[in-house]
Image 1 (cartoon, rainbow over the protein chains, first blue to last red):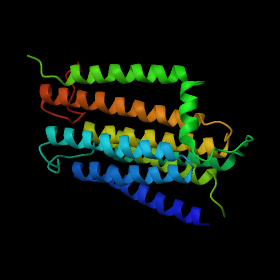
Image 2: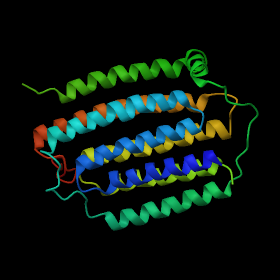
Image 3: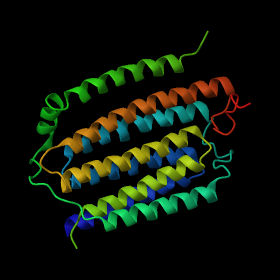
Image 4: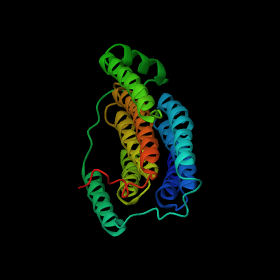
Length: 163
Length: 103
């Protein structure tokens, strides 16, 4: 019961601030409202016994990506962007498409009986995640590190001023 | 009524649809990237929730969620570098005005 209450509070925080992200005319407010959204999702991870993922979510998403987005807004938009029109002409078709997709997904989710495999999650997951990364998921780990390196170099090359 | 898998699936559906709406309707490229971040987070919630409620024997869902977070950081870095480059060359970040390749 306490878990359900915590989930409802976290969902309300997440969804309300996500609506502000999507709908705010002021682009800086939108980017700042991304922070409570991502922190709420970190809380949802903790409810799901994924403490390590929650910590990484706070560090990378709420810490790094939001700051990066704010920097780019400040470098490109000359302030808040409130002078510009922020939405295009597709608001009505977009709303219809998104509502149809949400209804379809909900119908599938409520209509499916999910199986449940045996076993329980470990008490503290960080150790097991490290073991998985270095044994059965070692290829994923190596390829991800290469992608990180390539993305780093690519971002530098693209953003550098040509002369 | 106890907390179950369906609660998390509903939350992630709503988040995904909000992100998709931002992608479809926003003009600012940075706002579109924020929509993409919301959609990736919705996918991550699904991965971690299925890990707990469907296959709790292994931690593959959480490992996948961590990989997705890493790749989202890469995507944000490269995407924002592209936005900076487009702004420097075209003086705009509105995606409906970036049309120099359109005949």
